[in-house]
Structure formats: structure tokens, C-alpha cells
Length: 243
Image 1 (cartoon, rainbow, N blue to C red):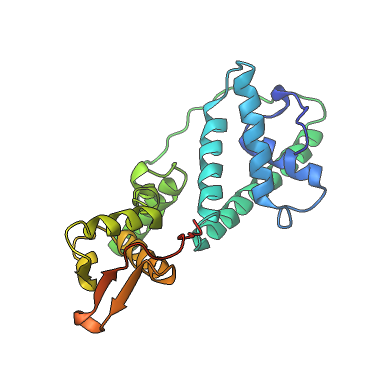
Image 2 (cartoon, one colour):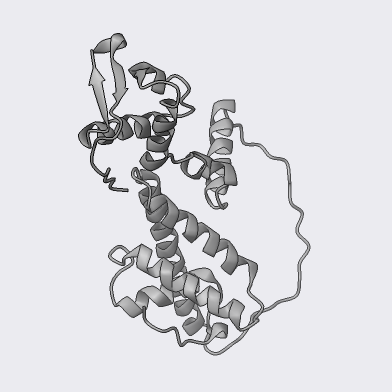
């Protein structure tokens, strides 16, 4: 990754920093690889923190948003990340247009920093006269709430389905199968799955039985519900498992 070497004070906010990173690629906003820009943005924020600088909250908020986009892009189904990337591209385009317009207005000011005139009293009628259908108001409310939530970092519960599952190894199930033959050299095939606590454990048990049968440590007799597993004592080869 290219080493960052710019000064912090030149950036008015996170959008300004993202536009700077995009401009270094010398491509349009629609062609820039967003995930690569995310890495450079996070590296910049990290350097700010390492130098004990006062990191503005909007920089940290954008960092959390970019981390969420990057995380969503790593999932097998990443349609959500594509929508979030397109939304970010749209916001960057609007921000870039605003900067261009502001620059043109600044040139038209002819060097004046501000304009002013004496205040005038204005009598305004604050009565709201427009009429809105309830369905449209409700739809607008849902759109506003949803857009706000997309900018927040994901809750911890969102990752529970990914990291909370216990992984059962085939080697551990081989040890468990051998222990089942302590008092007998013959066991029902179905009995090895009756007390499985998860799908992972059932799959590991099945693979363990196949590995033991291939190594001639057990013999499977019968079929269906009547199938039985017979332990071949003092026989068999070493069991090789691809973890």
C-alpha cells in the first residue's frame, strides 16, 4: 500500500479525504476500486490516532461505515455491499459537485469575504398549508429511518450466526467413536448420531466413520436402521485426516 504523506488540516471532512484518495488514482468516481480506497482511508485514520491527534467524530463515523461495507463484501452473498458502495459513490458525486459550485461562487465574489446589509423585519406566516396523504408520510418515515440505520456500525448480534457456531473436528469424533467400544465391539450405526448437538458434529461423525472404515479400523455390516459398526481390534492402518 502506498505510504500516506499528506497533512491532516487540508481535509475539511471524511468526504474531502475520500475525494483526495480518488483523485490520486486519476480515474472517475464510478471507476475507482472502493475497497482499495477503504484500506487507505482506514490507514489514514489509524495514523491520526497513533500521532495522538484529535480525530473528529465524522472521520470515525465514516471509518465505521467503511468497515461495515468491507465486511459485507466478504460474505458469500454480498448484494448489500454493492448497494452500499453505490450509495457511497452517489454521495461522493454530490459532494464533488458541491465543491465545484462553491469554487465557482468563490471566484465570482471578486475577493470579498462576505456580504451584508442591515437586517429587515419580515412578517412570515408560519401556518403549514400543504396536505399530505398518511401513506406517503409513513413511507417517507420508513425511508428516513432505514437510511440512518445503514450508516451505523452493525450490532454484535449480526455476527452471531457467523462466529457462534462450534466447529467439531473429525479427529475428536474418531476418539469419541473408539471410546464407545469400551464394553462392546459392536454398536448400532444410528447410535453414533443420536446425541449429536449440532449439524457440524453429525457431519464430523460421519466423516470419522468413513475414515475409520477406509483405514480398516471398523467394519460396517447391514444397511438402513439395522446397520452395525464392528470394531476390528489389532487391525487397520493409520488414519490420515485432511483438516
